[in-house]
Image (tube, rainbow, N blue to C red; front, top):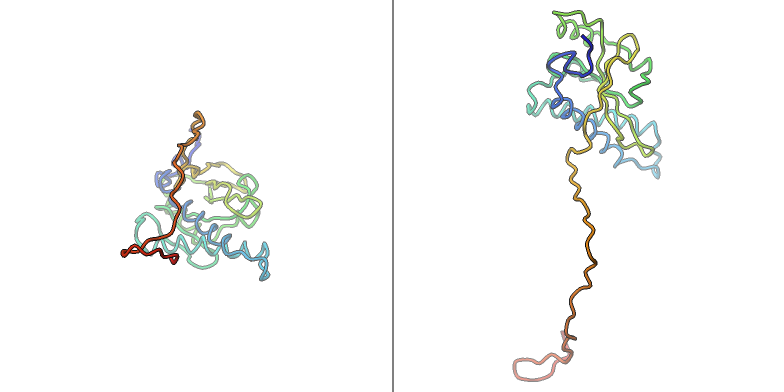
Length: 201
C-alpha cells in the first residue's frame, strides 16, 4: 500500500504533533533571525549555528516542561535527536527535495530507536527529518516533514503553518466615508473660579 502521509508510516506521527514541533522550530529560527546583527560581525554561518541551537533549545524546553508527553530526547547534544512517540526525528535547514549527505547521516541512537519504533514491520531505514526552508533574510518560508530512504526522498509533507497563530481580517470595499461636520471649537482664555483670566495651562 502506498504511503503518502507521515501517519501512514507510523501512527505516532500525527498532524497535530508535527505542527506542534514545527512551531517550536519556527520559533527558534525566528529568535535567531531577530538577534542577527551584521553590525557586530554576524554572518550566515553565525545565523545558521544560532538558528540550529535555538531550534534545539525550543524542543528541549518543550520536553522539560512536560506539556507534550509524546516528546522525548534521544541525544540532547549537538547531534540532536528527539522522538515523536517512538519515532526518532532530526531537523535541518535546506530544501526538502535536495537532502545533503550530512542530512542523510544516521547516528546510533537514531538507528536503535528506529528498530524499536518499527519492530513489527520492515521500515527499510526510512529516516525522518524536519526540513526548514528559508527566505532570503533567513526567516522560515516553509517547514516540511521528510522521509528519506537511501538518500532519496520518499515522503515530503508540508506542515500547515500558514494559519497557525496568524489572524487576518478581510478588507471589505465600501463607499468612502466623508466624515462628520463639526462646529468650530471655542477659543479663548481660561477663567479661574474667581472669574479672573488666566493664560497659564
